Length: 227
Image (cartoon, rainbow, N blue to C red):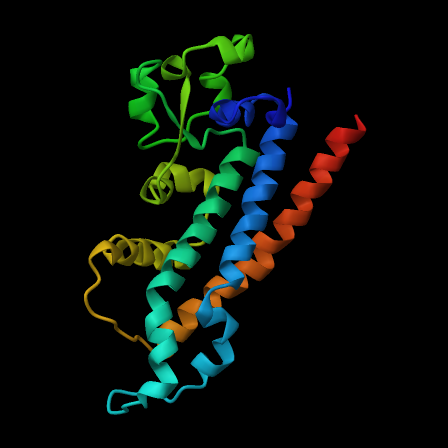
């Protein structure tokens, strides 16, 4: 069953129709996360950012920091979206749902999924895809909405995703900041060795873990295609 042969409103279901669908979706999420991550202003200009003089008594010229300050809010969104995509890809690779369970279909599992990942096979049966386009959208087992970042950061989800503790800590802080951007009335600039270290750790995790995984998933897709 191919996604492009169905109306868009059913595309979230087809993700789970077969293993290859899940892997292709995971690879797309990973590739998209890379595009978003590398467009962050702080990473495109990281050497400049890292070499800015910093210290408690140092006042940098506005001309040196204004772009970092104005782009800072958007950069936090870019970074969190990148890692959100990565975590959803990991769940998909391991057979878990990344879409919310429809409470009309299964209220108990809908509640459970707020704390713990749920295997796709626990919700979607082979019969779920029979005459799919004739089914009532409101009665489908899952909705088009995907899991929130705050959910993905919870302990039982992390037991599957297994982000390193340092990355998890950084993302949790960034998520809290991202949740405040809907009421941003002051432009701020944060700099210092601890911030540089955090950006360095995120960048290294992307280069050593996320980026190679794109190709690893591609190899797995090719193996499935050969069979």
